Structures are given as structure tokens and as C-alpha cells.
Image (cartoon, rainbow, N blue to C red):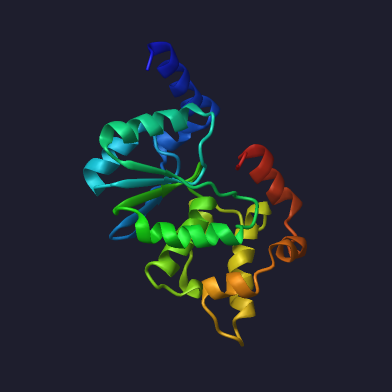
Length: 214
């Protein structure tokens, strides 16, 4: 990597992609003995996470992108021998059926310990953390609080669609119990749930225009 490209990538990560804030507060939390969640990590943070937490796999929920943070993450993972998995999710849209299926497979296939991240560590990684704790760890959905304001998640904005997904599962299965994967295959109506959801305008303005959630 040339010095100019490296400088441009760091500028992109720290300024354009709000990485300066993440250097101060990485939004890092432990999910289990084998899994962690965070905001977009810098190369320095990845080195620290590997050394202190033993991270073997990073799941990037932003997918490949043009920010310098992605190129720096990709290069750092290669240098450190960490597997980088690009698994794109949206913070303001409901997951597709195939996305849930792929997440379930992914949790069985990756090498642990694993770090999952999105941009801010609030919404997409909250969704993925819920799925991980339920599908791999067997924790009941009703007991999980991974989509929470303490991580920076706004449940009344468009990002509240992610809460709506799990709330709909709990409501539909209250009288007819079924697993989450069974519900996704048999009853999950993505278009109808999207049409039913009503975000609050002020909260959505903050999330979409000020925080610029992806």
C-alpha cells in the first residue's frame, strides 16, 4: 500500500466514516465466551482485540464498501491471520428470509472467537447478536436486549424495523409455538411487516440525517 493511499484511507476512516468517535468509544461488548460485538474497528483496535480476546474471525455487517475503513480492515485481517467475512445487512430494512438462513449457517461454520461489527455497533450488529444468541446459544428471544438504547439503537426510528421483526415473531408464536427459523419459512411476511411499521419522524430524522446510519 502506497503512503498516499494509506493516508487517504485513514482520512476516510477517521473523518468521512466517523472513525474518530469510534477510537474513543468502540461500543465493544461481550456476547458470550466466544463472541463480541462492536462498531467498525480500526487496524489498531483489531490488533488489540486479537491480542486480548483471541479473535479469529471478523464478521463485517457493512459488506464491502468504498470507505478507507474497509480497505484498512481487510488489510489488517490479512496481516493478522484473521478471517474476514463480509455479510451485508441493513439497519433500516427487514432481513430477507435467505439472510436469516445464511446467518444460521454462518454461526455454525465460522472459527471462534468472533467479532461482529457494523458502523456504529448499534443496529445491524444488534440484529445479528440477537440471532447469534438465539440460534447458536439457545437463548429465548424474549430475554434478549441486544437492540437497546445503551448501544445507540433507536427503536422509534426506521431502525425500529429490526425490533418489529422480533416482536412480530413473538406475537405470531404466542399461541402457535414454532422456532424462529420455522416462523421465517412459514409466516414471515416481509412486505406486510414493513407496511405495518410506523416510525416517528423526529427519531428517523436523527438516525437518517444526523447519525447517517447505513
